Amino acid sequence: MADAHVFDKSGDQIIVMHTRRHLVQPIRADGWIDLRVGWFLSLTTSGADDTITGLSETIASIGNVNPADSRYFIGLKTEGDNLPLTGSEVFIGFSNSQAGGPNREQGASKLLSSDIGIGTTNSNFWRPDNDYGVIPTGVILEGANLRRAMTQNFPHFVQNVGGAGGYATMLAMRLQRDNPSSRTVRVSFPQNVNSADVEFSSTPTKAELLDKLVNFPASVFNMAAVELSRVPTAWFFFWPFQNSRLRFHAFEVVEVA
Image 1 (tube, rainbow, N blue to C red):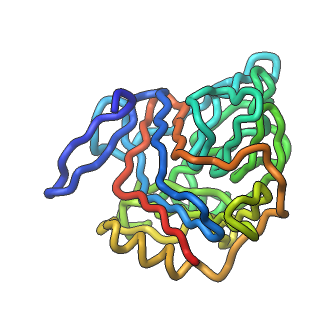
Image 2: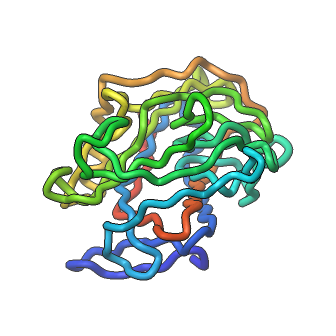
């Protein structure tokens, strides 16, 4: 696992991404019609494994254009670790990307202090954002093309455990298709008021994650069905910032008949 390292905290093994590195991991999920994936995630500084404050950052654009590696990606992808996406590569998940191709990203990429929505009534959370037009928060990308997008339904990461109610954020999504060989996919994300977070927990176990995926949230944002050239077969993660890194406390894949 060259793009991440593992450390122990109270007997749990936690995976921490290296700064600005991709992490790709194949998943075992063949012939699914209802696939649910989820993660317990948090952020930490670039220089310490367990510091969640002081992470704000802006990746400034040049001439209002940024490369794809100025954006974050948390989700599923077809084979390969290319960023930007090339050819018929597909990404489905959380991102502030408007397109997968090189030098097509407009606006600065930001990690902002936030409340649970899109404001700053408190500083309990960090919110990944960008400052160009309508902000994507979840996407389906195919090569350089943005096929579907979710907006204003942000993931949040904890900077104040007491205010958030836990240090790890649960994010999840659900992929559905009509038969095991179909390339037409419908994607759903949990939806609250300007928030895609399922819960915040200081006991982010795989058992807790599995329970929430089996009993998937009833309030969701549904993307319209889209026919893809290929269906993703691997986890794909990239965190673009220099001041912070992405931590994984648990991740799970569930196939529901």
